[in-house]
Length: 409
Image 1 (cartoon, helix red, strand yellow):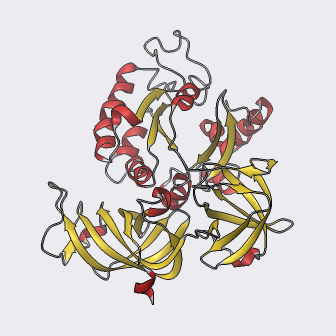
Image 2 (image 1 turned 180 degrees about the vertical axis):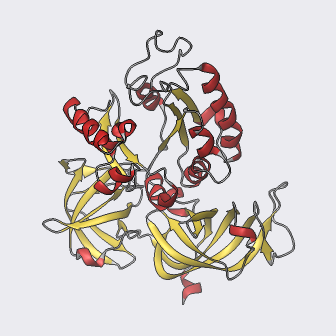
Image 3 (image 1 turned 90 degrees about the vertical axis):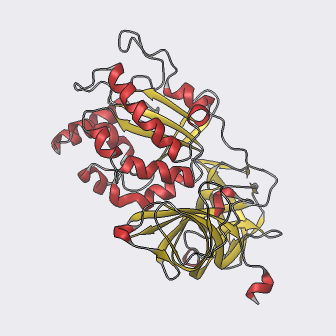
């Protein structure tokens, strides 16, 4: 449906999918361009494609929906403004993703924490023989999702929209559906809905913040990421943190186009001089010299415990993997400072020794290496995180305080 893929390519993928007995997957093939993914039939890396509507340029970050690939989903979601949650209407498939421990649930909770404020819930496979554009099935899925989206923190009236589609037939994607296909749907198509979504404001004149998600060599060192704040111009002198490398911008690419200047919210590739590709890790941040990002080994955060593994208790000494913007680091909870009363939302007097599922707690978190972060109140995208243990998201949080220079010294 997206102009990116012509009919001939679709036919080629259709043949390939048939050869591997995966007929229904050939639409997914178009996004899944690496061989490993095609064989398994799941999206692994965060795929990127671009399409344009009349008013907006979109980058699709096709995040994996499969259980063992949640870290990749986190890196996709942390760059997204709008979440499109694709749910299968096929009998049994929706139920599997939605049950306790299912992927749909975890993705929604992660998306909310990672700052995806607007959600489109796209009910796909409406053309499936088990569904046949049934309004009852569509309504059933919506009625089950709404309370859950609410409990994950979404304002369902304001920030969530549902719509039926068929990805395979391309129904209700670019143009509204014919009544002959689906007599009961009077709403907009996917493109119209995407165009109408208001994305969060970012400050083009704020201090530059661009978390690096990838890097490679190409006539210099090229870094990739999304500009969360500020702007980049050709010739700018900038800083790569936390290693304090002074760099100069040689070129900027947006999609495939070379541009001289780029503002916040864009996914870009920036060619730099002054730093070797080997000296940059994903999770480093390109920032302004005058106001560099904070580089710390500990911070104070408000955490919400989702679901600990097998009756584990959450206490000082608890270790987990921290995911914050493009940083992935092992961390340890070194102190539980205050527990928040869920009813009054105020701190309790007694300092907690441990907390259980569902608790909200203020704690001190430590990592081994310097990481680049900000307070949530200053830069939401760089101050919210998830904690994972053995491949499962156990808590979501936001940074409330960073150590001052005096504390470090």
